[in-house]
Image (cartoon, rainbow, N blue to C red; front, side, top):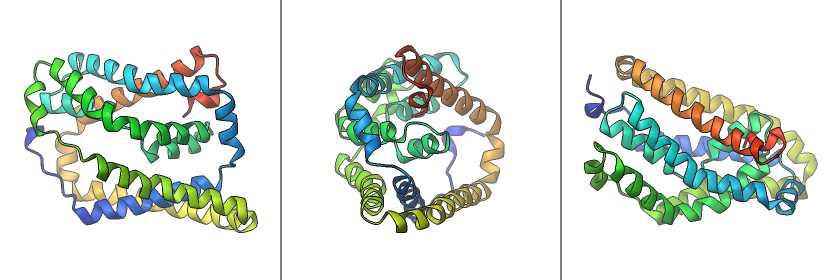
Length: 243
């Protein structure tokens, strides 16, 4: 099966459901995050600044090198570059929270980096994509609505996280009771969404399973290793590497 000819069974309604689930996940994380965590980040800005630079510059560069050595099509190469150049999303906070990492650093990176990516994302994709011998012709099909991206960030990340922090600060007893329910419900809902998506696209998934799993595993592994190595070289505690 030609990867470039695949059409996934994924409707706009499915995207709305996913966004609601992700917003609930962010609410649960905020209910478990103390405002004092952000003061610690402000007192030590060096890890934050280095993490942002690593995300903006090092990850796209390393990803570009991967597209040259892995057996990927031009469209897959451009997809990898696009993912590497995209702003951090709320899934990163979920993984950071589950790994016992520095959630405040992760959320702070998302809050500051996302506005920056309105400028850096198209520039980074255009730069690295134009260097790839097979992907440069596909760049004309890549579009981005910056205002829609900001609205999505606010509704999915900013608003639920602010509500969670406010609820924890003003009604700590209620927040403590609600947090476990929100955490597990949103996690199970996310797992259910993934299962339904896999079932609906199972034939496609099986057809391209080998190459997709290989590329995604290597790309994600390198990205995680890059983040952790950056933190350790900067002399930060292990939890700051899990951001």
